[in-house]
Length: 460
Image (tube, rainbow, N blue to C red; front, side):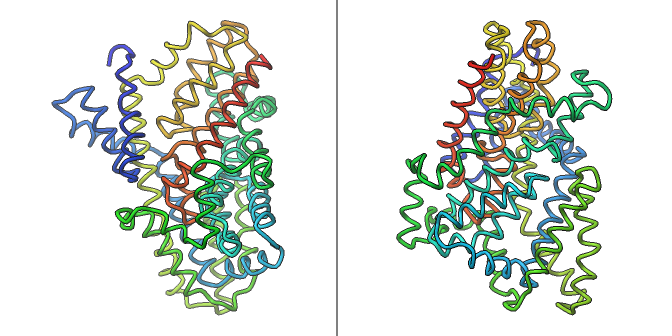
């Protein structure tokens, strides 16, 4: 497209509508991408889809994500099959005395695992699921707590993959001097209002200060009546990929060593956090180093033969394929939205209203809409920072405040979007239907977003 236009809004609307109706996020994203390509050039839809797919699969970020998600699935399979995760759950049950304390444990575990939102979402949901199940807490509530302490926590901690990525972007775009990316990022942390509000809201919801309402209340009532989480979905959803992946992990727990030791869970997780920090917050290198130590550690204990370990790791990798597929489809969809100039259209539509006082709030609003529509929290930041930051300088706005608004929008999109990687992995780790998780947590994410928007207006 030569010029941004309102037509670019059509594909996101199609995706959101289909995701709600079909409850199949990968299919919805692919159809949305095809609709967008048809708007660009109806005669070459399939050829352009093939090109976009190859472009995405050749992207270094996608390759990294596939390796991280798949390898983490392999590590989870080892933790589960050796009984380490089961032992953690047993010990957690001794400390958790009721629904509130079990959810608080989930919350604090999410805060502690701040290195990476993928690591956070997968680890916390998988380890706490059986604890919350005992107290008849819905999988939707568990997934909400997990998701609220994934991206929002990682945004607020400068020792995270988010800080490294966004700090690098600030340097690349001239916002921060060479080597000053993280320090500039730290200056913006107090202004990352959405992340602060989202994290603070969780204990308020747990203790009932913010009451349950809407779909979340319905899910909690169903859980209290003993209705299993996976029975809350329609019958046609039973054959969705995320259901099969969840059932595969569930079967691993059923086959796990019931005499597993807590140390076989704590050592690999501790190593993963330590190695990730050591390798400059690179989760992929952290995972490789962790497996390099964990496999011999398990072999010395004679927990299982090496061949069985490798088989379990392959099965664990397979369990992550639905999540990987959803994220790949989301990146293809984002590429199509970029071709339709969706970011430029939203910014151009809002730029007449951007003054120094309104800019942070309008940046948060527009970028939050984009991140929610495309499911790309990191990608949207990378695309829009060259447009937003010169505008911020031109109107003499508070630069750390504008950066905080951008990162608030990114964390909102990561948490609220139905098909964002963080949402997918939080649902996967919690064994919750993806769309059920997205619908139940959306009202709470919107409340936090509204508070953040007002906060940006007041501060500016």
